[in-house]
Length: 208
Image 1 (cartoon, rainbow, N blue to C red):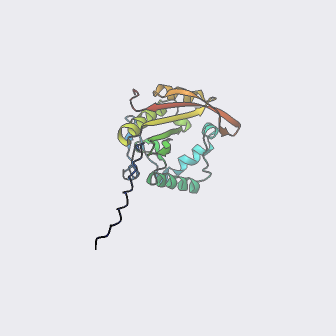
Image 2 (image 1 turned 90 degrees about the vertical axis):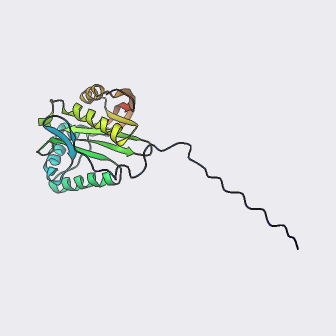
Image 3 (image 1 turned 180 degrees about the vertical axis):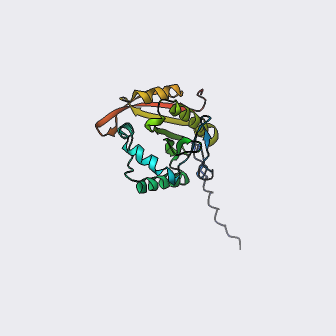
């Protein structure tokens, strides 16, 4: 007896995401956080537990407190914060370095916050302790980390935001080649209220 076999079910089409990812998950976590030279005497390197005193000093500095959310009232809190920096590298949420003499404790911070490998973006953050200011270290560190983030890690776009009442950060961003893209109205809450922010950006292909 001849019977009609049921027609095979149509294959389920494989839908490809039309928008490619910039970097795959695991790209950062698989890397060892590097030490990057800045000057003959200074580097940016991973934070260490022994840098806790520098973090406490930063948390009590009026200029750093004015523009940053940094809570480290004692060395125990600072060491816990440093441990979170290390954990955030592994979770690929952020990449934070200390600015330091090659053989000394931290004198500043620079890093990539809001890290998004899929979209290829991050936001630059930085500060310096008072004794380290006025030497061009912030500018050198910003240029160095920008090169690493784009050329070595492979990000596509970096942003840098600062209060419109902070012209020093504006000058550093512009000297580092970050293009001013506009003003974000009432974008960040500081101790004295809401501040407008200038938005700067650096993308693959910009000269540095």
